Length: 208
Image 1 (cartoon, rainbow, N blue to C red):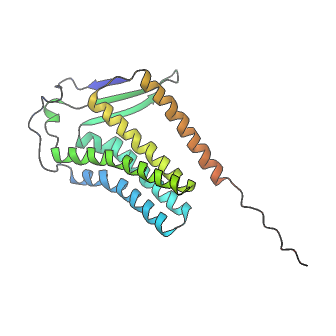
Image 2 (image 1 turned 30 degrees about the vertical axis):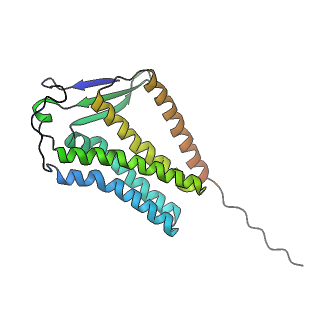
Image 3 (image 1 turned 90 degrees about the vertical axis):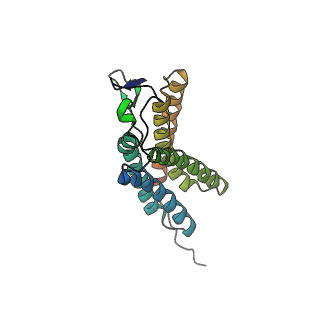
């Protein structure tokens, strides 16, 4: 793991007076809309018993768009943070965290920053609550959607928290990466097993 800063940076707290208006209204809207729609559609489809396959595809698409937008656009523009993960030639995973500071950090809107962090934290909490409800109802099909949502939203939350605090990754991070990879493999195997099941064979009714 490495923390990378610009050459003209200052430490957090030394930036200029922050802006108190929305500087990127469209970006702020996109930061909220995809994750909000995924939760709403999940609740709507679950309550009204809509088809699982169609709901699964729509929600996963929304979650994927939310992950990409938050990781590559909204974090950089709204709070001046950026993170990514890459695999080196030896197959080792590396996390890279960047923080924009100095004069450019001072141009960040406090309103956008509050919206960014609120949405970033609230979404995983909601999915955890929905996961507990799915367990109580023994609804394993919908739990797959929740696990995908937790994986994507949790990755962004972890990445940006690490950008903010600038903490180096030690043994705890390595263990976390191991169990995260194991969890993702198990989730993919469960999804593959579910969709590859053949429908039960129908038998002709016996006549007396």
